[in-house]
Image 1: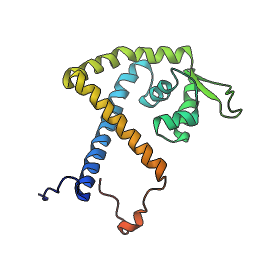
Image 2: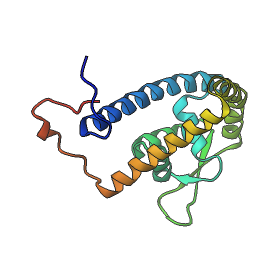
Image 3: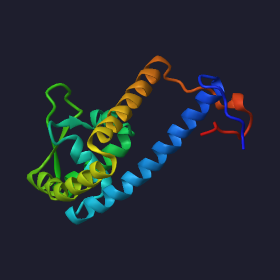
Length: 174
């Protein structure tokens, strides 16, 4: 077993980053699985639900949805086109940009998302019972802080460090 590193050392920080990344990757898989189960009875996929959810409060251009969700514009475009073809969303003119139309849910899209509500509420209640309301709120706040910190770092240094420095065929430790 590796020897524990002093708190605040470069290696200890790397270990924390690795543990955080692996935990988030696991959570991502768990949330995708649960989201698929919740969305299926409403006739949606997790990805369709995610895109519709991004525009429930206000219509957004595809690029805005992608930024909000942290995924590629092309992925959102593909899903948005499918949602429009299925009658769950529609494109509307964008007064701020002639070519970048806004995506908004149709009545059918709103209804599909509403059908997810009871299962979503049940899962939220079960998670709150497992974690406790205070810890549940703290968890959400910590994840929001982490996302904001990574956004800040990306804005400061948009280019990732060169992987070549690690040697041929090597990837970062996560």
